[in-house]
Image (tube, rainbow, N blue to C red; front, side, top):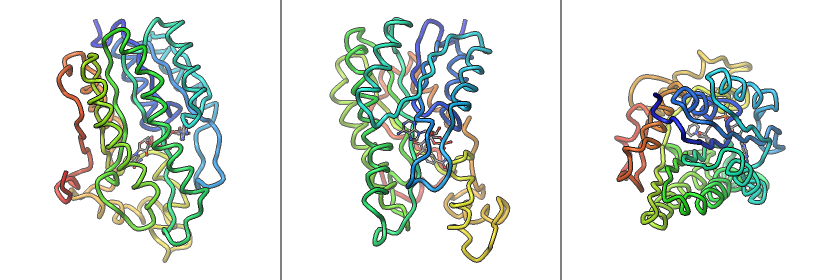
Length: 278
Ligand code: NAD
């Protein structure tokens, strides 16, 4: 018996990175899994986003764990697409019990030269996308009187940082959205909690654009070159954490036993939380 036998988990941004780790863990725990990902690059995101092959690979891993998978190319910023995905999942799998609003992009530019397109992308993918996910799954969860919603903020949802005005604003917004949603849904058996990760070892941080921003003194910085800069953002002397460390917290919030944990924010950021209030 798996902890999530008979459950259905939706994970946005499930093609790779943290989303893939969550999807596989839910499948291993016995849940059927629904994933979406935009599977397209953005003109204002300076690293490649996931591909349709990545999405298919996550679906393969879920099925290899013995569970069913619905995998759809969909942008969380598109409410109609999210409503359609949820309708399909409820029709084919009967329910959505767990939703992990994980999809997001990193946008880096100083506020004085940030374009409206950059700002809009960060807010659309990181904040409106979370609203659309919560909004799409909530009616079915209310009907069934059960739900576990986990949103993904960031340690930049509790602090500011150079070049990160849009990203940080979107991730602070996720925390306000999470807490307010927790109150709106409290009497329906639905919990809503946020996780605030530090640096997580995924393509969002391991890319040439971010490496060059962190080490402008080097022509082609490597992971070793940027590791001390990443480590300085944590309190513990580690540059980045593995996606599975976030998965453990997602599973914790998603558990049936978490019925009375709602409206919280859990930092997993190698001790950086000690530097900020909240
Ligand atoms: P990632 O880039 O590997 O994964 C993000 C996934 O989301 C990609 O597959 C991407 O294609 C998808 N995506 C982006 N915008 C989308 C949209 N509008 N609709 C659908 N899919 C979309 O990075 P990751 O580290 O796995 O990121 C997962 C979440 O964790 C994000 O919300 C990110 O902001 C957050 N986060 C990451 C870090 C980190 O250091 N990696 C730190 C804190 C928070």
